Image (cartoon, rainbow, N blue to C red):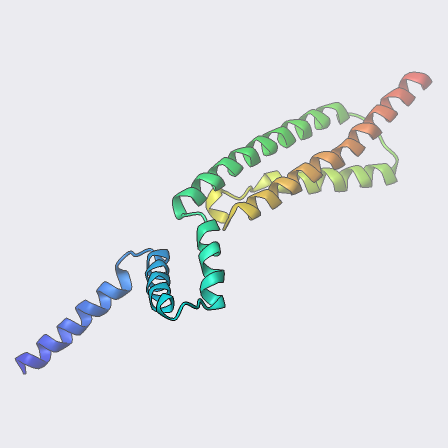
Length: 166
């Protein structure tokens, strides 16, 4: 009975070590590649899988490098968000008290609301899985900033027409 309990505890310990022990999957892949290269060097042939895995392993950044790259891109994203937020605030201030035609007002409202949605509840660094996701968000913010150019042109047109008439 004691032997049975000992075996069960040993199996649980081995299972938990395998499940929760931190390891780097690239180390396992490198070991298997090195063993594969040694055995294939005897036969003097390499398979296509090993030729493909080796360059991919060299090009993939480690976790620390990935975090550094993501942090750098996220700082750029924060700067772009700040620029957009300031520009929206400035345009809101300029538009205060202006009256537009219903078509222009609807167009301005759609553009301003779309840009405001990007800033209202921004994603934090942990919400992105990689640098590509952050770059996509930066491009969204830059697109919103360019679309605000239309609103500023409408405001300038409106103020110039008011100056001419008034």
